[in-house]
Length: 332
Length: 294
Image (cartoon, rainbow over the protein chains, first blue to last red):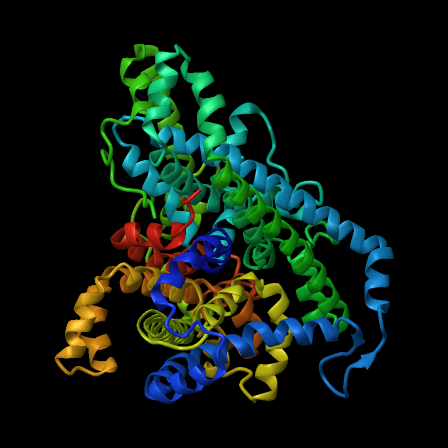
């Protein structure tokens, strides 16, 4: 849960971290002269060795379980292999060709777009609305904020199980709430028209409180002088919000979009508990497809190719975010 | 880094003023909105806890009884017996404690090295390590399974823990924190003859306590809630962790009692909810760390 948040956070901050870290090293070893470098090796050998010693466990783990997978996954995507026996068999771009032409995979991409797109829009709109509400001076906002944030740190499997019961057409809360309006509860997760909607609702319920916290932090760090100026100019509160708050919040909005996209790509627990990708393939998203191909259909190559596609999408999204955030910094 | 504070963090906030000056109508609307939000988030949670304590007769009736007539604890024992929840708990505890501990140690050692030790091109190395955050777990899933399988770690605690024991974001947060510490203190300790390990242990770590707590808690929440990796790396019921065990309970043949399933859900959710109530601020800081910098 936090790791997906984390990755986006690092995307936003890594740019800012570089200059700061430069000052920490003191630039003591920044020189082109090889001789001096050798001398500095000798002089600081103990310190260098300690550095390597402290770093090595983490470095080995990250190398083995983060970087190596990218390389090997790229290779696997060009092979056919059942992961059980034998060795990967080279098939070139066959897997990609299959994916890009298969109507099943088009459905998967459509599901991904619908799920991720709706959740992103919902997170931004509802998260911002909640944050504005929590930023008002009203009693009880602290308690509600806590209640809204809480589902975010609860296991996705638990949240999904709870909502399965809520969505139970006969005994669930959804029937209780819809009954007074004379509406029968849909068969949420078993109806292919409603299954994806159910996932979107549950994802938003779990995540939007955290998004509100992020927005709230943004709202509270706004420069006050701009608001004073707007007030003097006689701007109403809606104009102020639309013309000042929203533009100033746009880096936060971009951050929210990126962590939400990454988050929806990790929603394995919800899909596994609520729909298992079904009915049919109504809720098979790209990430679920990767899991299904790799671990249920024993088709490592096709799963790996799906993973590469996802990786490229994510790189584009984070690249756009970085670019956008940098531009904003210059703009300010 | 801006962290969400308790209420009244900035009383003179200009954006809150319209509400105070606004009409009574506006205030009423705000409270209606707040009440609606409260219902939206508390309602399902109440449904969870109350259902876990209801008798089957109270669950399978319409309209339902909102308040359980008496606490029906049998739901918990029922769930506990229908699936090996004892094993699930032990596994989750071992994996969470082990994983979070190794993560924390890794984060600390790496951050200290990056901040207080000299090494050629260490900032390049730092950025390379940080770059691993760009790798989504969707990409690592298949290959890590192959790696762990080659190591013979499938269905073992090592297999559950080690692949997520590296620390990137925690290391990043701690490094940023250590960089704000006054360097004179470190130099004073060095002059007094303390080696690096002693300086780290006795001088730096005590000063980093708030950030260590944050990094540790985030790691605990992450490990406890992890789903897809424990699902693929374990293959016997006895090695499952709680989130997987909950899925197992619900799909167990003949176990269709929502009361028992909600009791199982409470067992998975409650530990993190309790942790959250005590450490909400640290969790918020850890998760939003660096988010709002513009």
